[in-house]
Length: 127
Image (cartoon, rainbow, N blue to C red; front, side, top):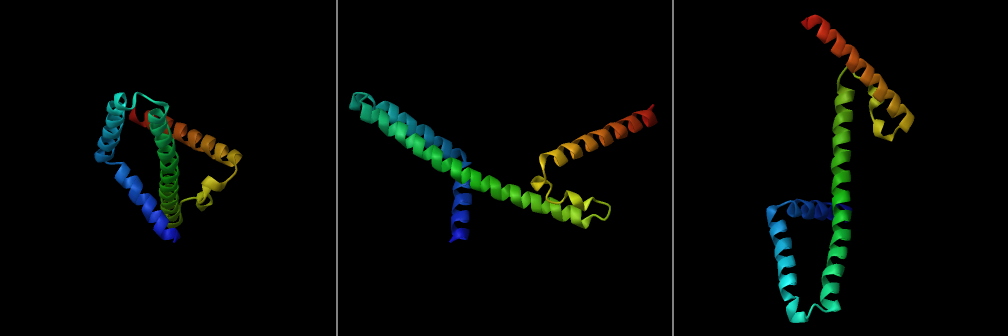
């Protein structure tokens, strides 16, 4: 069941990324706006759009969040595998996203320092 829901969410996110979904949404809004005079711009007429967009937004956020989480997790696993496979790589960086913020900040400072050192070395050799 879980696999079916995941597949469905991925399929919906993929379909919504197409230009046709934009055209369909714009057409829906246009039809709603044109129908205003026929319904005398009644509160019910306004409610249809307000409720519809709220429900659609809520569902789309859930679908997109699921898809983004899944893709991010897959990317992290690929990076973890690369770290594991490279002999000189620091394997303590595997699952870095789960480490405390202080450790991540410390590593960020360390890599920034290494980058500045490499830039100095590069500029001194190119002169």
